[in-house]
Length: 153
Ligand SMILES: CC(C)(COP(=O)(O)OP(=O)(O)OC[C@H]1O[C@@H](n2cnc3c(N)ncnc32)[C@H](O)[C@@H]1OP(=O)(O)O)[C@@H](O)C(=O)NCCC(=O)NCCS
Image (tube, rainbow, N blue to C red; front, side, top):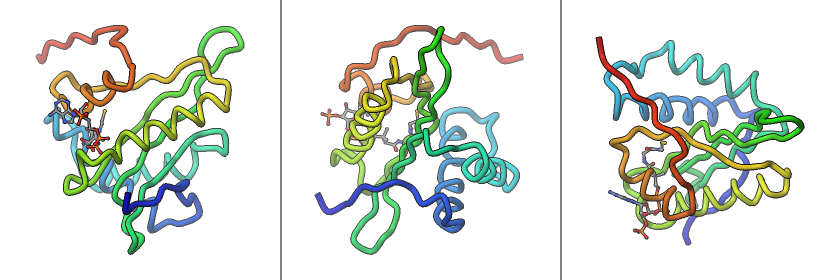
């Protein structure tokens, strides 16, 4: 594989901004109500800078030039009693590098971190039309545990 995987650099504003700009573009792919605008990007950036701790998982895949070709963010969240879970906030691979196993490695690294952190489980939200993400998660052993039904008014 021509990519390397490492933790995102939370002290690197430019790196976080790049990720925030890409990430803000994911929800509008499947839901026109979401906007990929400056306010959304600023909120994302604030979340990365001020809401993540050393207990969360934030990985990037980079190419030989240091260009970010993928990222995966999982937040440690309380679950039941004294248990914690990992909530997948985002997962992305550059379109030109998809279907080469990068998404799989990012998810496997997240899972290794979750096991090490003694989390009970990982979970993720996926739009029902997002076939690549549904396919990837099902391939890696995720099962659908509930449905959100929506009627647009
Ligand atoms: C989801 C995503 C991260 C996958 O990254 P990737 O690097 O292409 O994933 P991998 O190459 O490791 O895995 C490919 C697997 O994805 C699944 N997949 C890919 N395209 C698919 C499609 N059109 N339909 C169903 N499953 C598909 C398959 O299980 C495939 O495995 P296979 O090749 O053995 O059949 C990437 O498509 C992406 O960034 N999408 C846009 C952002 C996004 O939707 N993020 C998730 C938000 S919930």
